[in-house]
Each structure stands twice: as C-alpha cells, then as structure tokens.
Length: 123
Image (cartoon, rainbow, N blue to C red):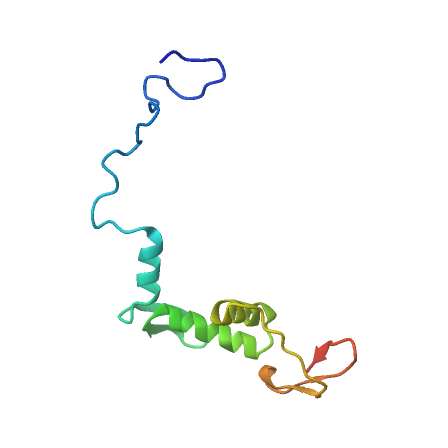
C-alpha cells in the first residue's frame, strides 16, 4: 500500500481494509475495568485503614459502596446539595425536588428553618 501525503502512521504496519487490529479478540475470562470496580466496591471482605482526625487510623471492614452511600447520606442530611442530588440521581433515577410545601421546617435537612421568602435557609 503506497503512502499518501497527509496519511498518518507507518504504511507497512497499518491495518488493511477489513482486517481486525486484534484478530484473536480479548482472552477468554478477562474482565473489563468496570467489572473490576463493581466487584471491588461490593466486596464485603474488603478491609483498609482510614485516616481519622481523632484516632489516627481506624480499620474499615465491609463493602466500600456501603461506606460511600452512608457518607453521602450524612452529608445530604447536613445540607450538602451535591450529596442530596447524587443520592436522588442514582437512588431514584431523577432529581428530587425538596420543598417545604408552605411549612417552615424542611424535615429532610434535620429541622433547618426557612427564614425568608427567597428560599434561603439558615440554621
């Protein structure tokens, strides 16, 4: 195959039309990285040490996904909009609209009161 101006790559090693770059395919039994990630975050036998301000290091045992979701729930309860949106998006497949429905208390945020009419909230 002759090299043409503007063509990139080495013409001697380029694939021919209809020729696969990996004719034997991926090896049988090999996993995609997404499968490795899913298995690891769901692994109940997972163990690691986590830095803790008060105690130095604490040992964590259990599925990392459990800790990730618990952390997001705690942040959402404390008022973190990103954590709340993440939980709604992946837990319910949609954005949650959390309103007071005319009440002065927003229960999901642990009793934070609404102080003014432009929907700003303060503790």
